[in-house]
Image 1 (cartoon, one colour):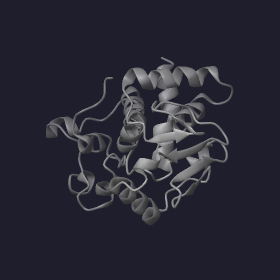
Image 2 (image 1 turned 90 degrees about the vertical axis):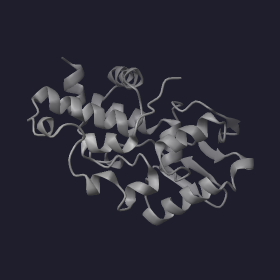
Image 3 (image 1 turned 180 degrees about the vertical axis):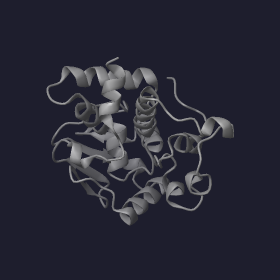
Image 4 (image 1 turned 135 degrees about the horizontal axis):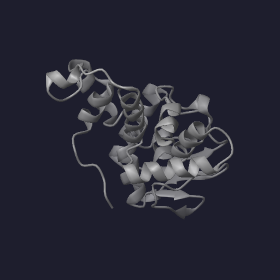
Length: 209
């Protein structure tokens, strides 16, 4: 399975937005954006004014990299969003939020989406009593998400939970019981529940060309 293996901090610097790709590090002074307030690359290219297409492309890259998807994966999500009723851009973000790897991250069982994806792929996540190792699995209302018994006392998991409690970042569309290491989808996410750093309409305009 193809995946991005390059430096994660460079992705945040390229978009000039903290994408929380390295978990706890992104909240400290070690965050690359805090001490390198400019995009990577030669200084001459950093000052180029973006065209409308460039703005749309950067917005697509920001969303795609935030959820740690490759181009083909991201485009597949967008195409599915166009087939659903409602606003395409909002549908796209809701589908991204409903991915199992994102849900595990949102519940606080992983400090980053990359870590949560690894958690899912290694078979440490149980949905409604059944092990699911597909990161793109779409959760539904009333689904229960539980960490596998033999992983519940893992140090990495405990560290992620401590971070989640400190930040208080659990969204309102899920409920979590950190003692039992499980959570439940109480409703589907809405646009207001999703981080407002995204301009999904720019992505719709980009793919409409």
